[in-house]
Length: 108
Image 1 (cartoon, rainbow, N blue to C red):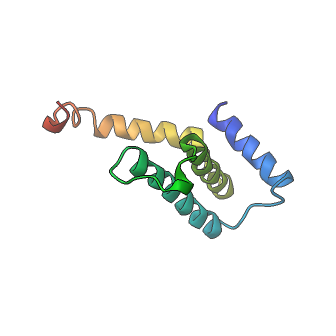
Image 2: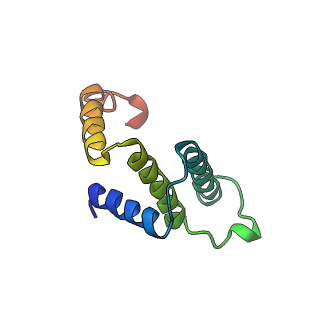
Image 3: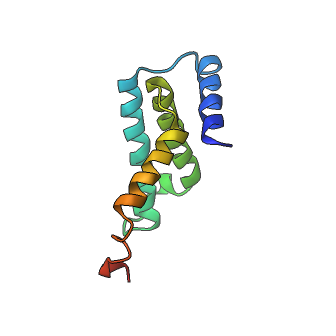
């Protein structure tokens, strides 16, 4: 799926199954909650924390999809075309960071 298709699919789902969008502030709070769930898994799977019994069956991909879903909701609500936003962001990074990472001793 393209980002444009993702935005359309999420919008269709929200307006049928989901009834309507939560307001932007609520969705921002939900986004933070979902990012926290990804962070918890990362700290246990790749960091030094151990899994709790209740966390052993978590699905990192599913949690990342939750983050993407809510981010797409916010983009739809605020009129952001994620394809254009990502293109502009990559252009900015390409100019700003053209030599930055190549010259970073920590990355060698």
